[in-house]
Length: 234
Image (cartoon, rainbow, N blue to C red; front, top):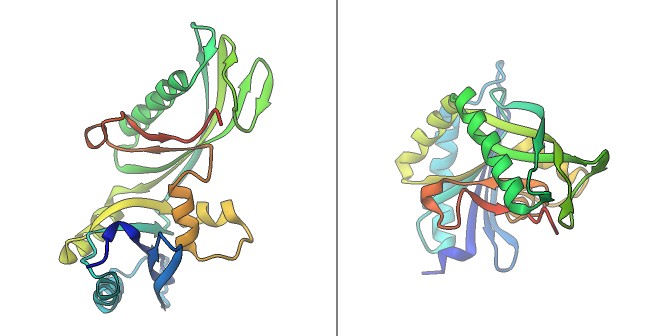
């Protein structure tokens, strides 16, 4: 069997279309790509059609990969996606804006989100702007001496209800979801770049957006709360 590490499966879900990709990450090309377009009077994902779509395509992907599909990345477009911006001012008593200081600040924001929006799962945490001593930065390259930092942050989340419905379908194939990604965010980040959405998602998951913070469970990673604090200091 082929080394499953070299392959990633991406499933794109919306109320208009389903797409599925098998990405060869070693050679960075799609070995398999299928899509299905459908019409509905409601802006709602047809879960019955999604189940049929997977039934037709999962076997073909497993045959090409030479292994069972155990994990999948889901790119979703749905009206349950919640976007909002917030501003945070944080005092820094040590006198240095460091990676550790920012990590603690963003961890607090994540905890606050979970406490107040427990019916949603956070997909993306994006730092749009840093303001230090009145100066605005789109990203930070070096440690900066300051007593205070002001952050403009965007949070993108999705309803736990739609997650439950999707994962209930995937249970049939014993597939777990690695990541949920917002389709609108991916399209907006790349704008007119004409590559498959699986390539775009893979690059973002591997740190292309230096101002996105990827979050993972504390219990699943030894390195701490943040899977990767994406090069906020370059």
